[in-house]
Structure formats: structure tokens, C-alpha cells
Amino acid sequence: MDAAIAQARRERRQVIMIAAAGLFAACGYRAAGMEEIACRAGISKPVLYKSFSSKLELYLAVLHDAVRVLDETLGAALGRAEGMAAIVTATVAAVFDFADTHPRDAALLAGAAAAEEPSAQHVAHQAATLCARTLSQALAPYPLPRADHGWLVTAELIGIAQSCARDWAITGKALPKHEAVATTVGLCWNGLAGVQLSRTEKPDLPGPAG
Image: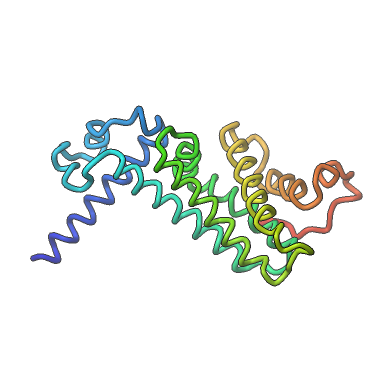
């Protein structure tokens, strides 16, 4: 009996988080209301508060779930990459895949970074730090001439990939994903000179999937 009750609570919690994630992603933390979330989840507001004591607690739970999805996406991509060029390509492709396949989670993390709520900003910072750490581990066999530059390289690579993927998604994905990924990889690997290479002078990089 206790196991059945616990299972029902877990299932209800998951339904609530899905409903909340959609609303938070669409209108942000401040504009989202618990009554609307309860309505979307098909429960009453008192029942909602039995699972989450406050809107902030619910918001942070949803954000942490989005961070988990991002970390799993990046980790899986980097686990198959060998060599610095392949790692750069895998990183960019993973971030674009996250924005493409999990648009709600991507919108949640972007909104958290710009939110006025300090705890939400902290989660967004944690996400960036976690991604940078995962990338640093992948790059560990290929040390830079100056080790103290490593944190900046990884943080900026993640930041560029996220910014480009976000802009690509919100502008309607007019460019095919593989082209958007290749352009971003060229920017990260060779700078603007790499993006401006002629067709006969393309950088020797592994082609991203997608």
C-alpha cells in the first residue's frame, strides 16, 4: 500500500513538473501562476501545494531537471569524440541538439539566466559550470600551452555554442541545423577567418551529425 502511494506521488509530481515547465518556459517565472499550473496538471491548487510548498521550489525543481537533460546530452556527445577538433564539433552539435530536441528545457535555462530571482540565476550558473567541467574533462588529454587558460576556453566555447543555438532556434531555424553547427564550429575553431574561408579552403574538421 505504501509503495503504491509513493508511486502515485511520484507520478503526480512528474505531471506537475511537466505542466509547470511548459508555463515557465512560455511566460517566465514571474508571470506564471500556481493556479494555472494546477489547472494544466489537472489538479487543485491545494493538491499542488502538497507536492511543492512554493512556486520557487517548483521552478527550481524544473530548472534542475533541465540541467540534467543538458548535461546528459553533452556528456553522451563528448563520450564519442576523440581529438580537439572532434570535441569542439561534438560540443557545438550537442548544444544545438539540446536546443532543437528539448526547446522547452533550453528556454527554461535561458530564462533562468535572465531572471530576477537569485536562486534561479544560480542554477543557470551551475549549468554553465557543469558543462564547462564536462568539456574540460574531455579536453584533459589535450592540454593547452597554458593550463590557466583552460577554464576560459571551455567557458567561452560553451557560451558561444549556447548563444548561437539559442539565436538559431528563436529565429525559426531558417538555416539547416548541420549548416548552423558547421558555421559555429568554424567560428570556435578558426575564428572569423575560418567562417570566411572559401569553399576550396574549408577547415579540416569532422562533419557534425544532424
